[in-house]
Image (cartoon, rainbow, N blue to C red; front, side, top):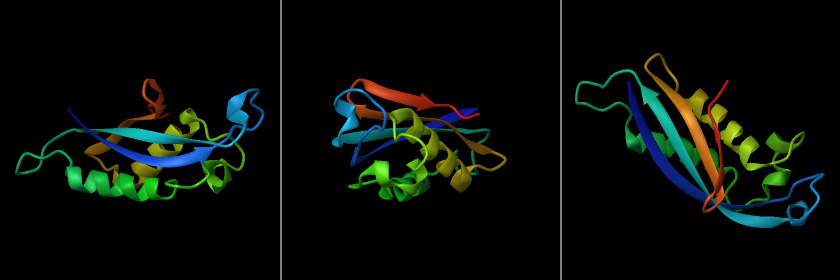
Length: 123
């Protein structure tokens, strides 16, 4: 089994409904996202997953959130755009784009600031 990972970033604002404190008002973060993918085997030239493809797929997902107020994104109409929920949404979206019989998203780690983040491993 192989693990391949990439890290990307985007900037976006959010606020947390029902939270008592500063995070209840709109504020921004420079988010970092680490995607870890597992592969059962390598292709004929020794690659498990092409980094270029993985970056392209994750960048497509993150483009929806970049420079927006994530709290207003339809994905978060019924839940807060916490790091935990954002990691889960990104995990599920990336999995639908790349998972196959040999490759699967293992986890997504999202940090809203250095040293503060959440990881989603899937169901």
